[in-house]
Length: 292
Image (tube, rainbow, N blue to C red; front, side, top):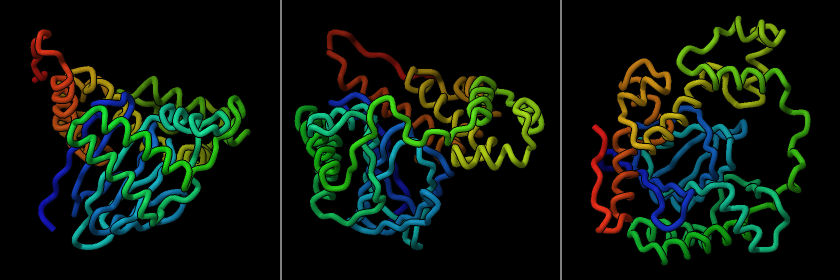
């Protein structure tokens, strides 16, 4: 397999949808979670990833269906790596398509994570290729058709609006710690300080936090930092400043963690966002420059 390549960009015709096309050999994703759904089609090789307490493998033609906020990682399952196409649609969009299918209100879910379904694979690939070619009408139509097809074949209706999926599973202590960490990304409290604030022992706190979020507190901080970094990069902030504002030690620290979650370095990620913005800008509005 050739050297590693990756492109991460935003859908030109449908807000709230990101896309990735990549070929990885040695790249390894850290444990992380997306606010979006993750729908991936393996085109070559094998990817292995931890998800829901299991180590899963997806090979050629396999479609991975990951629900929002589920912690996972990813790496090559063979020495030759893997190549894949990924859609990251916002849960609101998936819920909207589910409503068009007359499903009950609530965010749908996908109980089976890796499926081998040629029709779903064709739908996903068709939507992804159309988005890559930039035809906004065709790509938006094919995207909705793909989401509807995936929901019909493998989805499950969401819980009723306003009813928590897992009542009682999120102790107040974990929620309080999450808030403390989100408010102090540049200088997070020590584990002892967090334990003192919650009245729990450090060991009990880490165990409860990992059970509820899928990550220990220190990894959760980097997870939040990468999410903040993406928002800042989307807003045009230069990567060097993003590193400071998101709480990373320096730009190299940002790049290392960002690539292990998103799949591409911060500057390449931002370049695609701005290129897409420029392609959709009417000529009379002029051009803008990418931040240094």
